Structure formats: C-alpha cells, structure tokens
Image (cartoon, rainbow, N blue to C red):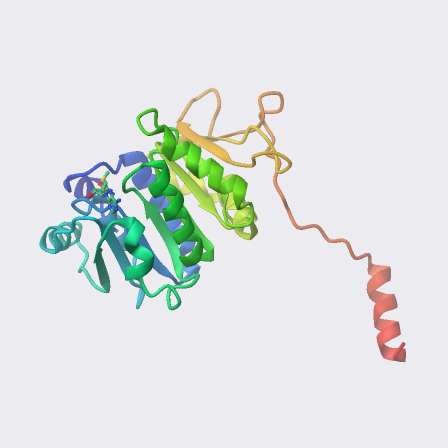
Length: 269
Ligand SMILES: C[S@@+](CC[C@H](N)C(=O)[O-])C[C@H]1O[C@@H](n2cnc3c(N)ncnc32)[C@H](O)[C@@H]1O
C-alpha cells in the first residue's frame, strides 16, 4: 500500500487524515468486490489511493471535465501501483449518464468519491448517478461537506437524503468529507466504527476521536476529529459519553418456539 509520503508527493487536495480514514474503510472492504469510481480527479492524488486498493478485475473509473492520461498514470505509478483497468471518462459530470453503460454498472461500485464542481445542481445530479451505480454494501464519499466555501454542496446532499431516504444514509462526517452508505449497510459500517476502525488507524501512526452523540432514532451519523486525550478514541452522547447507541440484531425466538415449530413440522401440521 502507498505511504502517505508517496501520496503527498502527488499535487492535489487529499489530506493525511482522509488518507487514514480511506485506508481503514478500504481495508474493511476486503471481502467486497466492486469497481471504484471518482468524479473530480485533477492530477490523480485521491485516484492514486483508489488505484492502490483496486483488486483483481475491478475497474477504476476516473471522470473529470479535463483529464490528462499521462499525468494520471504517472501519479499512480509514483505511489508504486501499475495503472490497470483504468476507465478514463472526460466529461462534465452532468453528461456522465449518457457516457457510461449504466445498465452494466448497475449497483457495481464499492467506492464512489464525488469531488468535482461542488455546486448544488451538480452534486444533486451526481448523487442521482451514484444511486444507480453504488453497491448495496458500497461507500459514497462527498468532498467539501460542511465547507463554508461551498454551502450548496452540503444543503443539496441533505435535500437529496431527505427526498430519497432509502437511497443513502449519512454515516460519518470528518475532515471535510461526508461518508454515506445504503440504509441496509448502516449496521455494518457503524459496527466497524465502534470496534476496529480506530485500531486500524493507530496502526498507520494516527489517532482520531469518533463522536457518536446520538442514536438510531435520530440522524445516526458519527463525527470524526483530531484525537482529544480527555475524550479518548470513541465518545457517546454528552450526557452518557461511555456508551454508543447502535442498531444490533437481536434473537427473538425462545427455545420453546423452536421445539414447537419442530414438532409441528414433524407432525405435518
Ligand atoms: C478539487 S479537484 C479534485 C481533486 C482530486 N480529487 C485530488 O485528490 O486532489 C476538482 C476537479 O473537478 C473537476 N470538475 C469541476 N467541475 C466538474 C464537472 N462539472 N464535471 C466533471 N469534473 C469537474 C475539475 O476539473 C478538477 O479537476
């Protein structure tokens, strides 16, 4: 995997903190096979990270209104990865539905990063596209979420989520990016953030504090920020900081119901 020094040598905006967060999530996706997709590539800084985590036959789609193939391939090679299975699409994101084979790409993408125009119109349409292509267990990342420079980027993501509650849910906000997944994958990613994620990130030489200040009955996302000693790695609600409220599966069948079901089946009733 690339070192931060290798990624940092590629011009662009992708931060050290996002490098650590992406590593943790991308390694957690080791059991998922699916393509990787980015809108807003510039010189290939975050794309080099994705290229390093591409496995087997997975494709890496890189879309930008202006693409320099040589520069992007050089960036990917500079982080120690051979640029394979690259699908470069030079287009405005609004035109992507006409440029991609959306039927073939239906629910095929495990990682989708939106870092393009940052206007409300563009991001809303990019979310519509993401809904077509992201897998049920995939992750969708939106850049410059909560950024004061691009308020429409945040308001339109929230508007999209309100209008389409069964497309995506917000699961994490941290270091200028929002992380979303399908509603049915919220337990998977929440469990990871409550257990293995901070451990993974410590292995890369970095610590963060994850705040889960409310529960599943509410806007159930967590926030991540620089590590605070007094808070530790994980913090719950302000009035109960040592607990996280999570959705967990619960066994609802008593042993007696199993026995009576077995008897009924055996007697054919
Ligand atoms: C902030 S840069 C991307 C940074 C990159 N992800 C990195 O790791 O450094 C934004 C990119 O979005 C592209 N872009 C802007 N508007 C776009 C649009 N409507 N459709 C496609 N690409 C767009 C720009 O050409 C630029 O390369």
